Amino acid sequence: MKPIAHIRSAFPAKFGIPRQAGLVKDLKAKIILEPEYRNPEALRGIEGFSHLWLIWEFSQNRREGWSPTVRPPRLGGNARMGVFATRSPFRPNPIGLSCVRLERVEWDGPQGPAVHVLGADLMDGTPIYDIKPYVPYADCHPEATQGFAPPDIARLLKVEIPPELLDRVPEEDRAALKGVLAQDPRPAYQRDPERVYGFGFAGLEVCFTVRDGILYVQDVHPAPEQPETRL
Image (cartoon, rainbow, N blue to C red; front, side):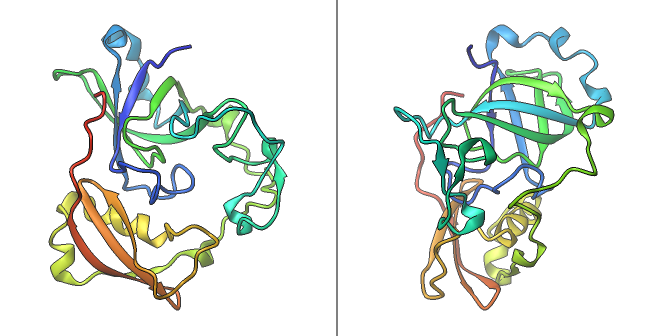
């Protein structure tokens, strides 16, 4: 197999990316098809679907060998579960699956047609192997059980950003940034209230602390220049 596309997202590194697709609905990303697949006919009919499945590669987690058990972050990294009972990136084959909302198709442009999506949980430059439509009659199962990973609304943090720091974030990115921060980007096993965390987002470096269920943004400044992606 070979990639049919790569994604452009707000995240230059893994830290800060939402743990699942769809958790931050304002998060914008753009799928750039490889030149040989930039044929508008390949996307004919796609605008009739509200959501898409993306099949992609955990390109930053390539490793030799595999383990039958992993430590899911949801369990604080203290318990092991079978790799096939988790969504861990450390798998025999580093394949990811994400359901995203289709925002629009950019038919014209130097890299068009390009697919704009919302809610993606992918790092900038992630290779995509396929795009498939989400069809509710087959893909939606309201009666499904969730094992050890039920939604944990209580984990959402209150986010406080001083107005002078929020002004440094482009207006179109503010809701997405607040959504990412509310999800608590910290590793599950790190809960030091004095520690200052930082991650890259949309060309910015966002620094924050967390105390008593409140995330305080300490600084927002231009991120160090990143190596250009292949896009």
